Amino acid sequence: MGRSGTPPAMIEAVDVAKSFTLRRRAGRGPRRVRTTLSAVDGVSFTVGRGEFVGYLGPNGAGKSTTIKMLTGILTPSSGTLRVCGMDPSRERTALARRIGVVFGQRTTLWWDLPLRDSLTLIRRLYRVEASAHRRRLAELTALLELEPFLDTPVRQLSLGQRMRGDLAAALLHGPELLVLDEPTIGLDVVSKATVRGFLERLNAERGTTILLTTHDLGDIERLCRRVLIVDHGRLAFDGDLARLRQAVAADRMLVVELARPGPPVELDGIEVVRTEGPRQWLRLPRAANAAAVVAGLAERYEISDIALREADIEEVLAGLYRGDHAYTPTPP
Amino acid sequence: MYALLAWTWTRAAAQYPVSMLLLSLATAVVGALDAVGIMLLFAHTPRIAGFTAAEVLFLYGTSALAFGISDILLGGAERLGQHVREGTLDALLVRPVSPLVQIATEDFSPRRFGKLLPAALVLGLALPRLDAPWTAGRVAMVPLMVACGTVIFAGLWVLAASLQFVLVDSHGATKSLTYGGAFLTQYPLTLFARDFVRGVTFAVPLAFVNWQPSLYVLDRPDPLGLPDAARFAAPAVAAVVCAVAAVAWRTGLRHYRSTGS
Ligand SMILES: Nc1ncnc2c1ncn2[C@@H]1O[C@H](COP(=O)(O)OP(=O)(O)O)[C@@H](O)[C@H]1O
Ligand SMILES: [Mg+2]
Image 1 (tube, each protein chain N blue to C red):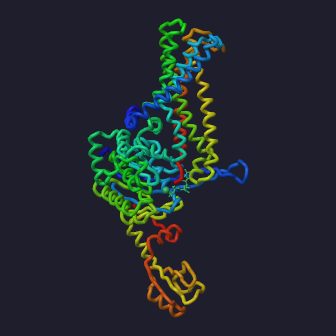
Image 2: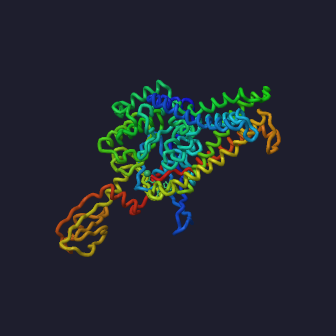
Image 3: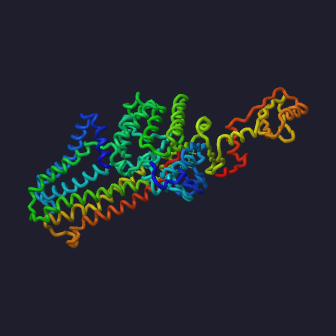
């Protein structure tokens, strides 16, 4: 696009919050009480040009709500938001020309139209020139392997095909920023791989900035250099994958099988996080010497089996969500 | 942009030419039945409330034409409620064209023009049979009143659509769609309220779309004794209705809250 005065940051969010007023029935009768739900509760982050950022969090964390604010669908309750240098809710239509949006859970295509017609409508909506359209369509058709189902009504497409169609629809106008809400949700392994491979190339070769939400860690590990983790509407982590891995390394898990069920074992410097009959899960701090701990345990308890494993990323996330790890914002 | 989108949809619809033709015919026939009803009424009495058959057909023809055109242009806006309830409005909002235009052109098909046929026919029948003092002003008034009528009705479609933002929200339909169950029992309520609102809003300005200008064209005194200026108020009323509709639409859109996923 090369507009003059385009700021270097694609997305700038400062203390962005969104709350919904809910009306609930109070007991019996028609009376309703209002309650406020904070879906996004003061989130700040910056995404630079060309970055590939994963927005990760459990269900109901506020990921979709954030995406809806970034794209201008929802107006933030407070805070300031700039996307491509624009205020999304005020300049929604202008912004729409510069970003592409994909919702994994619902299509932006027209249900009853063949994919090809949907893409023609998109071309009209974005006023893409015929020659540019033809070129991009050919390119996207090849990359996403759309050819076999271009003439099939969207209604009849499989989820994986539909997602590829949606990706093409979001990119026909050549956006600088692509925002995806759970693009791999429900996809089979092969479709997931296609979508991930495509996004990787898009970011690497075209330099398109990509922000995707997911609760699929595979997406993150394969694609994202930087991860934002959100929980209960707040940022719990902002940093690169390596730092997240470091946090992973900080904790190892010792699974001990005692000869008979008993109370949680007691040993200096370790914590029992779970017991299940004779089996107990012990968290080892990074500094702890595993061999010494095992020896100490064997001295005091009768142990029938023991296993040491690196905590996987899911556990770290679960820990992050519980607030086990202190969050330190990365300096810009 | 509207025309471009309408054309794209038409081309999509043209893939089934037979069904399109049949549907156009069906729409036209249903509309024509109304006109036949009026004719039958006058088969026995030459005048109703002091109006001749030609005059009543003129009233019917002009308002039906205005309504028909507005319906073609913006009648689809009715579907907004559905889009809001299902959260599909999200997809329309991320495109660089007003969601109103997108919804109105959705499924656009030339069959919609079928609705105009009976209205145009009735008007064609009525005009030569009118016993009106045809001055230049009166002749010009006929297309003007159809145009103003179209604009007013179009504004009302938008207004009705804007109300859907509120109706859906106030009945908690958005929420219950997310959480299932209760949605089914609340849906008829929404529907009922919508029909009621539509009835009232379309009936009131009809006086300016049709009745007052017709009094001028037919050179008749106003039975209610409103000042003569009322006969020329249609453009002003049209402007006011549009302004109100625009504000309502913007307000509605700002309060749109999507649905939980
Ligand atoms: N339109 C809405 N009305 C009421 N509550 C909503 C709405 N959208 C989202 N929420 C609530 O806000 C919270 C965050 O939702 P969401 O952003 O969809 O989470 P995520 O995408 O991370 O799963 C949830 O508790 C959800 O129920
Ligand atoms: Mg979500």
